[in-house]
Length: 290
View 1 (cartoon, one colour):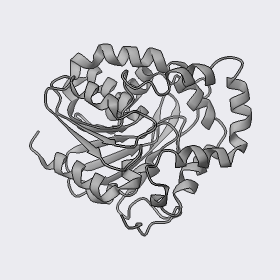
View 2 (spheres, helix red, strand yellow):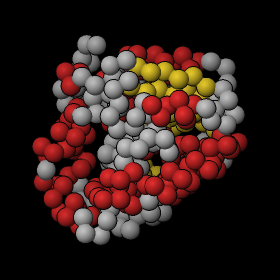
View 3 (cartoon, one colour):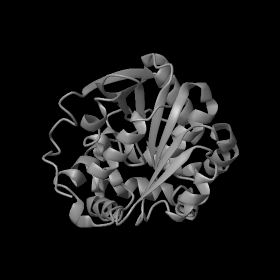
View 4 (cartoon, helix red, strand yellow):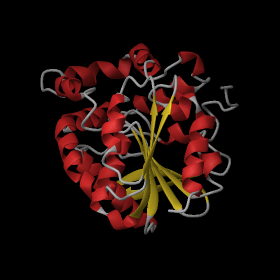
C-alpha cells in the first residue's frame, strides 16, 4: 500500500468543485465531482469531505459524487443548538437532496454516517437505489454505548468542551487507534482531520451526536425492516476498534441482497488505510446493474 501523492493543502480531486447550500438557515458545504447517477457520501463523527480525497477521482467516472460536510462539521456552519440526532441528520440529508435536485441516489456512509444513510433510506426508500455501508454504527456493536452516556452527561460535557480544543496530542492518539497499521497514515492526514476541529462549535456537534446515541441505535434497529430489500455492500476492517467487526454479520442478516467485505489487517478507516482496495470494491458494486 504505497502512499498517494496528496498533501493536506491539495484539493481532494482536480475535478471536484466545492459548493454551498443553505439548510435551516446555515451553510452546508459539499464537494461535487464526476457525472452519471448520483452517489451521496456521508462522513463519520470527527470526519468531513476530506475523508474521500482518494475516492473521488476513482468514482467520478461512474457517478456524480456529492461529498457533504454535515452541519456542525468540516467546512459547514456550526449553528447554535443544532439538532444532532440520527433522525435529524437523516432528514437534513434528504433536504439536501431536495435542494440540489437529486431525485434518487446511491448512499455511502461510514461509521456514524452509515447510521445516517440507513435511516434516511428507511424514511424515503423510493429515493435510494443501493447502500454502501462502511463500518456503520449499529445496535450490535457495544463500542460507544457507555462512553456516549459518560461524555455527554451534564457534569462531564462542559469539561470535555473546554479542554478538547487544546488537546491536539489526544486527537492524534485517538485517530491513530482507528488504523490497523499506523505506518499507513499518509503525510498530511492527521493535519487534515484536525484542521476544522479548531473552529468554534466543532466539539459541540460531537456532544450533540453522543447525547442521543443509544436512543438513535434503538430507532435504527426498528427501521431496518424498511430497507431489507435495498441492495447493500458492507465493508469492514478486520481490526476495527471503533465499530466491532463481530457486529457485521448481525447487520448483514437484515439485508436480503448484500455482500460483506472484510478487509484483513485494516482498521476503522479503510478508505484511508487501503484506498486502492476500498475504491475498487465500491467501483465494482457501482458498476453492477441495480
